[in-house]
Image (cartoon, rainbow, N blue to C red):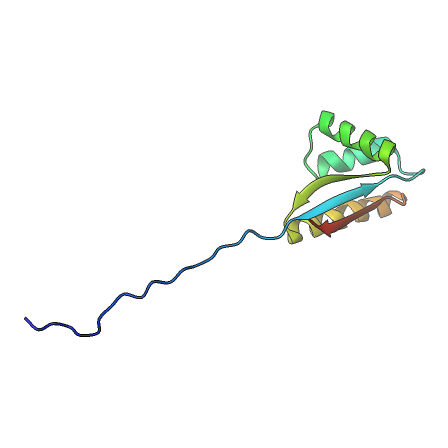
Length: 100
């Protein structure tokens, strides 16, 4: 039986990295109602009522708060949806995202 010369298996290492996370930050203002902010947190950010109210009060008391961390696409989609809904309602609501 002939030997195969130079036959070898090449090992390749694949490094998988987690996608970068982006924090979504809500800011307090004097015009957007607390009820509107709670509704945004429930409908767009999928928070339950208790968590939405806790986050709304945190934003109200401290001026801003991180309301979630997501991949870039999801964070951008949520920010745009919240800003669109605020614009439709006539609120100067401010929400941004930044790399964590």
